[in-house]
Length: 189
Image (cartoon, rainbow, N blue to C red):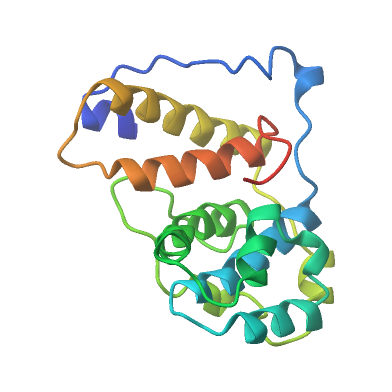
């Protein structure tokens, strides 16, 4: 039984306006996904109030500065983080969960479960990332789209209904990550 049936949510796929045909599917390369996971793992340090200069230094040393999003660059340019930055960074663990699943580093993407807190341990943080990035293999496109449709359905369900077992913020963060992975969002936001 799939997760939607367990939750009592009708499985109605909402197709994106941005993806109408197979030609519209332009997914990030495996190397981009690997770098995105590494950046997120470092950026979670904002939640723990790691000094922005230290984070910038680590990201620069790994050659990941070009992989930062505009928002991440803005956060690192601040002299100190504000409450919103720290709150947002706290949710990035949910994005990391999906990225690590897409990289085959975990089997877990169940919307009922919180993100694993040890995912960063599976990434080469403070080590050479060259081998990790070049050897990256993604989960199948079918599996990515299956999770995308699952989270898409749950997200649209939660727009109109409350559900005691689902955390809407977790769903939104993971759904946004899946939208980037399947190419609906071309730029990480």
